[in-house]
Length: 166
Image 1 (tube, one colour):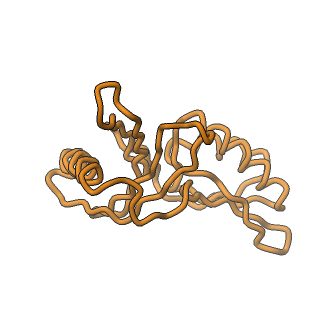
Image 2 (cartoon, rainbow, N blue to C red):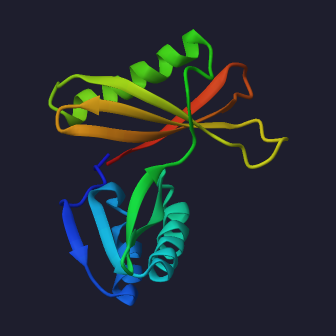
Image 3 (cartoon, one colour):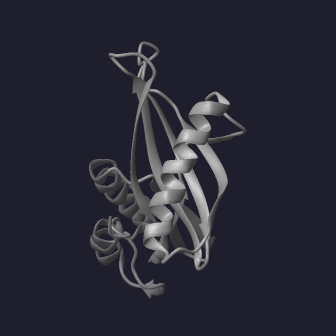
């Protein structure tokens, strides 16, 4: 699986350009900081980028921040709330083993460690699927995986993950 990242840059552009850039930056999401004149333009850019992020399955969302003096900034944030553990220890180890093996293939045998788990709220109270964001630390920074779990028809839990998102 190819990593979704872009080179780190700071961009100072107009509001319309910020909207276009924010939509294009969803693939690499966390590497971009977008500066925009005025909070209104930043909020519009964040809305457009977040719609694209949802469609792409990204675990990141853009947040508009007022910098004062008529300037604003967009910055990425992970969805969900941090949790200690939302699954039993056996399932947690299965997920960790899968992610660690996947990471080893991407980092030429380098080590990755779990640094955070975030629980994503369910779509409804009747939803039996659980989605979490697992953040792995590795040389060069952190990456996020979207981990989906649902009851298996044959018993147990089916696990699927997408990522890494950087």
